[in-house]
Length: 114
Length: 110
Image (cartoon, rainbow over all chains, first blue to last red; front, side, top):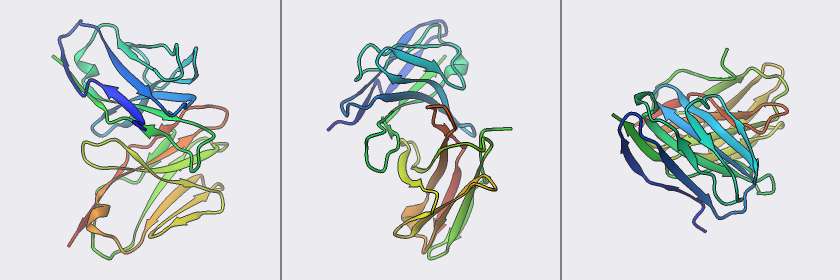
């Protein structure tokens, strides 16, 4: 099993550009989430989804869009990149049916906005 | 007040020491609790879930105190390889969101 796969691993954007961070999981997990991690701020929830077709906002949703058309994929879209969105982005998935349940994280996308 | 707050770090301890981290949560009806470990520039990895009765996994013991609204992680006989950031996480009541604390850095020295 690949687990949770994030692409790209690194990205540099110019202010105002848009892009999509990809996240895919092959564990048939119903829950998926996007977090950003900044120094001293811990992991902050951007958006999450409890199943295909269902998404909701987390703590810091502004400037980001998500959709969940399939169980496997949960892309995160930056509409108009700003330097404040420079961060490390983690996607995670979770299933209530798994033993010792807890979120499984992808390896992250390091985004720099200049 | 933040939903989840952790002890400020860093904790610098010698090998073999016992170290404890606390994490407080604001929603008294929170339902699920976790400890994650994160190595530098890596993704967080689940260390252990925290059960109401407390649970142990080798040198690691997690406890939940609902009355005082905190969870704790005890590491016995610290190893150099335990050096990492430890994050607590909570699923508040009636939500599906996993909310993290800011993490506590542990550095174990020889």
